[in-house]
Length: 165
Ligand SMILES: CC(C)(COP(=O)(O)OP(=O)(O)OC[C@H]1O[C@@H](n2cnc3c(N)ncnc32)[C@H](O)[C@@H]1OP(=O)(O)O)[C@@H](O)C(=O)NCCC(=O)NCCS
Image (cartoon, rainbow, N blue to C red):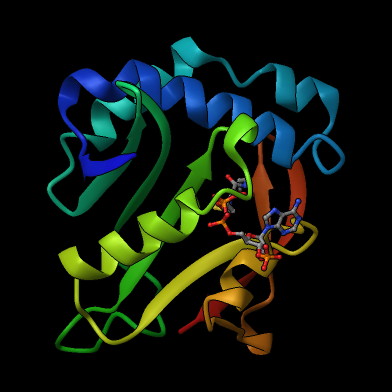
């Protein structure tokens, strides 16, 4: 497995991993209607934008020439942290192909991210019901209880909480 910076032409494969993993992670959390509205075509358009965003970096994990995971990270825009001179680092999202869950790819992506961005504090927002929040706990993140808030995704409301390391 190889981890490298994403290129603009990776947008389609990243979108494929994103959609399949998203549907698996949120199958018991989001409604069928919401999940079926998430398509590779729509996500690819989003990724075409993210991969050009100068505030974010994306790393992909590649196995036998195919993308099997990604992490996108950059400055946090959270109001309570923004005033700091050195903006803190936020993981915007990290997803692995469900066929590869639990094989260490997420861990490798996190490690490589730390080589690319050495800022001390790292934050990530996670849907409270998402059991993969455990992944961040395993890597030393702690829930910041006071950050609990509602997140509106396509009209559905999900409590989310920020983790800090
Ligand atoms: C979270 C994710 C990126 C982790 O990547 P991964 O390659 O599967 O994880 P690793 O193999 O490196 O690490 C394993 C750890 O992840 C967590 N994990 C893996 N599978 C899990 C599951 N089914 N339920 C809960 N936690 C799980 C555990 O903490 C596990 O540690 P353990 O083996 O000591 O219990 C990946 O599972 C994923 O894409 N999940 C769905 C998307 C998501 O929810 N992303 C996070 C929010 S942005």
